[in-house]
Length: 153
Image (cartoon, rainbow, N blue to C red):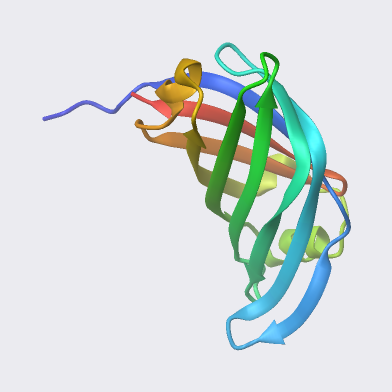
């Protein structure tokens, strides 16, 4: 029987975000777009800045269950460009999720927030990001998202 794969830390992303643009309640749920305005990347294998480009496209169900799809870019400290597509889910007790939707601060321990980031780059030094699976563990704050990114071994 195979054993559980190890998780190797890659980086912590602090993603600054703007106030949500609310599209409204559609047949899929509450649609929102949250612009990504910048941020930082620090870690053992990836360091740089998040560019002020991209957004998180969200669909939120009445109980707060959220499907997230973020697309943005990193410029590494050595000038390489990396594109990220990050799909995920976020859920917790309905009253906690309602606070997040209203832009209030909540204890991250009360919310399940996981993502699957996929990376693209032309930079040879960062090709290690383009093949393995990665897992993100997140926390949402009114002005930012914090993601711990791990390579799944």
